[in-house]
Length: 278
Length: 271
Image (tube, rainbow over all chains, first blue to last red):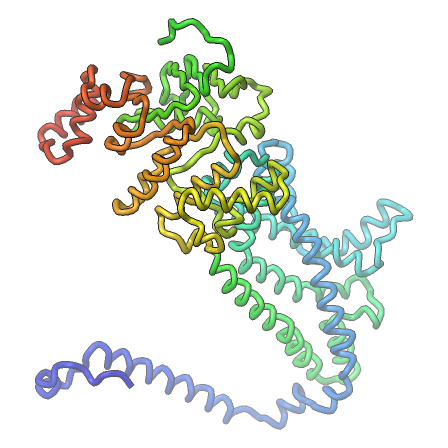
């Protein structure tokens, strides 16, 4: 589209291209190569066999509406519960880690190092079975839902604590000084001035945590859930076994995307809104 | 000065006695004593690194002194049991980098501490805020965010924010040093009108013309000591100490220093 460039004399005299022309040519070659590869793959694919194994609409029809009403809904519930737990605990840990009290710093540091290093599956298992064994008679509120909230939330809290800590430390020291100078206590300063500003910094990494939790909810199967408590992956596996066909996995994958893509969109909106108040 | 008798508490706006402050092995304040009277406007001048800002920040304990005492009115700020949050409410502070809260609008910047700290009703806080925005000529920007304002406007809002707490004295830490030259005047004008209203002010500044015109007293600091102090016209117009003379000479005539002089000074200070 853009200008046919500048030096007509040079153009006539030599076949050499200007920088812009070279860049456009290079880009054109890349596009052509990309299209060629995709075309080749599409041509070589045995669509009949592939769709028989992965894209059977009759199986999709049989999965509906329960894949949405049970699988998708439970995945969202599990992830949301764990996120809320991790958010609160993570924020608390971050504040502890920056505290002037050494014992708080030590505890928060140890928590983060431990739960970042241990597989989420193990933690979930230990929470769900370890706690009721250690405290006989203890019942998680909401049964499986309570177990998942704590079991997945504990691990996510470790990651979120680090995210929040980075966000809090990104707030300039002058903000703290200005607030203290106005007579605000340390706690008040954190709550009113520092954390709201830190929150904007951490929105993008926090989305990552949320998306990871959505996918981590697939670990819930270790708790021996009932059919009504299935999340997407377990639901798809179940269907996979019964139908001896991989279509349910594709459907589950699309459902995960149906959760994560709007989430990313929401975050972009939030960021745009906060950008105004910078 | 340290030989003066200790006055009855509460008779000075600020009373600093034998103040010392070290950062590690670097002693920034070496035995400072200074009294500031209610209604007085004091400008602290001196070369960079002389401890001016540190002295100011010791008054509201943003820096904790190594030794010595600071009294603000009747309250000993340096007492271990001092209720700092309560004392700080009465001490306004304006920073070189403004430090407005970027996530709050101009009006909210002025009301947040009134509501959260002074427990004022929201309507009262807003009324006080509007009054002070008017004082600094920023009424038209109450719904703007700090990021949408110029440096001079931000600093005027910062002054209004401090005033909204109705402080008994105001500390200014190089309030115009971060501003583009053409924005300095609007901030100095606000400070001058504040001085004329009788506010007690301690101002760390490099604006000699302002100090000369507005200050009741000028304090010259160098190397962690108060070298000379007195009426603004005398200290700036007719300095007695050699260090004051050479500092003022450099500040007032920045173009007359030649390279040889700079090199000589460097060598002297590192020797």
